[in-house]
Image (cartoon, rainbow, N blue to C red; front, side, top):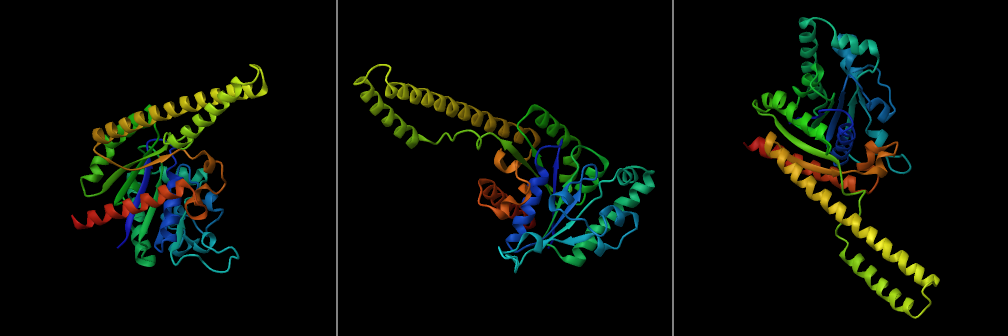
Length: 329
């Protein structure tokens, strides 16, 4: 059975493309067959992510200018090779279907009368059916355009599960409320499931609040320095070093208190929004600045050991459990 998962957001910059790409790669690494579709026609980015140019774009297929097999690209060997590049590291498969980013394509997809739009939407539905018939993927992962736009709604209509990503900010939160009320309830009323993913929250970039042992050791060192300093001149280098350590310890304690306050505020906000919109929080992902500056951040989950990789693995497991529960209902 094939499951379709769509990543959506109220506005751009929430990290949905990075999460969608990493989740797709992780599922393929685990041995699943996955097809990742870039249906963000306003700002498609997966062709840049994977540094590939397909024979034909999804746009071409919708216009009737391309064969189906020319649209889907198998990139399994591109990302799952051993160090010598001799053989794949997984029996899983990862395919991608990409949208063109040319202005004329965007205008063509957005333009036209209602009959033309209905025709394109019908072709999009048939595209998914052809994808399932030809490749029999376990998962179709869809990266959508942010906001309430015509093609965002078309992409969401293909999905069994929606992941609505957002950041901790009033604009994201209020926009998410509006979007859920306006469009999500109409989808979920027909059996689709929707979840919140809080991304780039505080935690990783701040010092951990669980550092009792480190603080204890720091205090012991500080007491030893204080004892020694009393036996030396007031302005000795050792005394100055002791003062520096006290200031560092105070700064660390302030940072830990700040991190604790941010964590509490975050949890309260998550719970409040979840209750207001009636959507479960399936994952909370801290801000990982170190991978955001990597050119290959979209493959972090399969290339390096990192806390972000663990979050993606957890998201995959929770998603699979939710899908099982959905099937048993």
